Length: 255
Length: 269
Image (cartoon, rainbow over all chains, first blue to last red; front, top):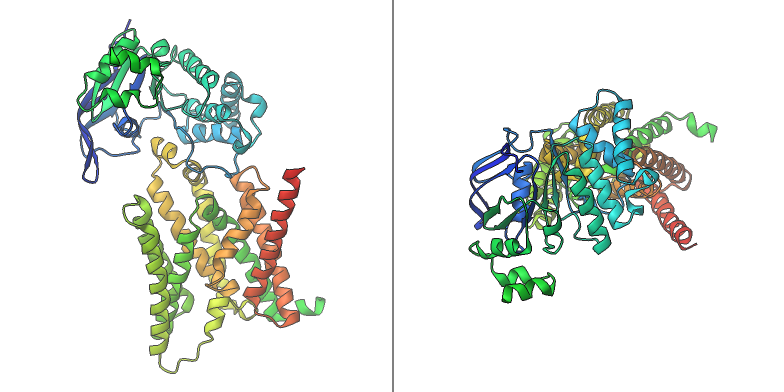
């Protein structure tokens, strides 16, 4: 049963990088409790859309509201990027990374409370034994979970992830998506993904982004729907969908 | 050695070393983790234009350097913000322009007889008390800055996009880091000089980064490394009658290479 409460609303959104139009006249909404997969070809504007919802990028025109507020002002949004911008070498432990989210959200009243919340999150993400390790010393999957811990420390109502499993093997990807499915019981999840094979198992809705956004607000997502989603959007060619994805998907397109 | 400490100029030099090390430790760590070494080099060299202007107008050279360095920092922050232009080229041009304008203004200064070398390569043994006051104030500003904004600076340095998504003005924090780098440059001019500043802002923090698990710890280690290098270089320059700034950098660089060898051997075991 889809909840009808809209927590994200986008109206007539336009965004361009210089002379290049990336998103044109986008209208969409995200409902409470959704597990929304954002898919689309490379350069279609998936990450741009997500960054606008987060307040990292400012739209040229249009209206965007997250929990009724301007993007970037709500403390109920948790963001998990593909990786952190500092790259390797930055001296920071897993615990400190998680505490960063807590500190910026400003939700804890005492240091002890912050520590308890972070400990619980690290425990849930099976990172508690690595909490004093440097980020440099973690595997790809552990790094991704550490960034997830930082987002969860915000105690978000919506979790937005930009290709969280792109650097992971199949087992790592499944672990991350299983975890997201668990989290989806308590919060809305929006995940940008390239992998069309894993999305049908988890997402409750799907949005194809390619200059515009075509969203399926269905309770169940099938691979067929994903294909229709790509096919239904102008400038979202089937050839691009096939790029980098399993052959199985390409064959179904060919049929 | 005790006799050495009884000299007024040596006491001033030691105090200058301590004050410069604090700036190196804090701001140098930010320069290294934010990978703004080239920009900081640009700011340092642009400051030379301010020194030339100060002599031309008959005002304090450190004040002139400060105004030029801060202005350069703001311009460079704006240029590099969105990477819209070839930022490295513009920084390179400003770097050279600052040096050129400094030399031209010194040429135009009537009765010019400034010891140019002391600004290019430092002259810690000749630091007057008035400069120590400037350095003390600048250190106070740097410490107040880091204590007030540490949470935001830490978050932006680690992951500026996440910080922005949490409502932090990453662009302003980035600009503030460059402005603080400009102040650190001014503070370090008397110690190692404009040409060598960049090594002082990078070598101790780089060594500290590998020995610490936090940015705070990195700043503390970098301050201590910086202090040791400065004091050893200072003593070396006194006893062997060498240029102080170059001696300090020489000591830093030797320790840097030894630490690289040590780290390589340790990780290969």
